[in-house]
Image (cartoon, rainbow, N blue to C red; front, top):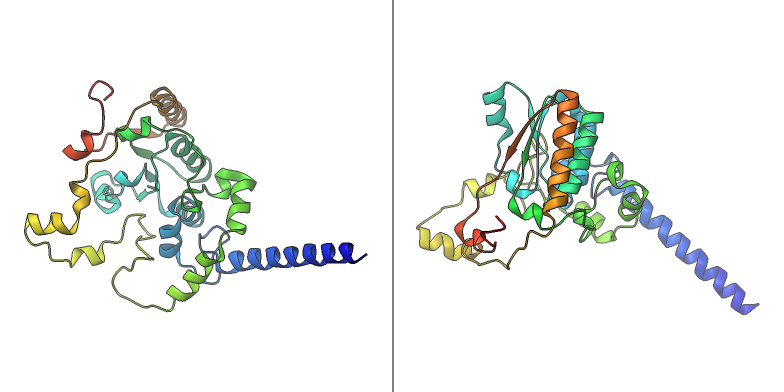
Length: 267
């Protein structure tokens, strides 16, 4: 009897903690997947997970856009404002963390079905041919529930409460310039560079000393998933042709030090 009682108490405690955790994540919504009714803070949400938060933003605001930049972080330099001026369209930069053509294709398919799309710009870095449809490394790379389904929704519901706690704490900090916890401009999808814009550059040597990543030789990259990547690109091409959507494919440039990580024959 005592054993059963303790089992029931333990089960009740686990259920209570789970319900409280889910309630906290829904109410605070650190990734912006449940409506973010309390804060409506997309800059924070996108910093935590741009895949989930940008899709949630577009779901609410898709009527304001009809052209989209697709791709990983190396898409971030494409300015929607400049593209608007060149094309007369209204652009949004949907770049996210991680180069995975499988996710990019799913995102494009979602946009075609749920938004107004006249054109896509797909940035296709060489590294996209090195991985394909891999499980998310952590919740920062988790796809939104609209694409990842119930499994993704469950991961956001049961996310570590430290994300919600950080959002509550950081919301009290008011700053004109970008902070580490809100590095996106929600209205365009690009990085907020207000802090970088006022940073003194100095000499090239001083700059490289401050940012040694521009000199760091990366690990070797092998393009083992080229066929899957190209199949996904072809599927996107076919989709755009069937819907009358213009598609521009751009291979972004690389630093020489990054290019050295690849085999020339594979490139």
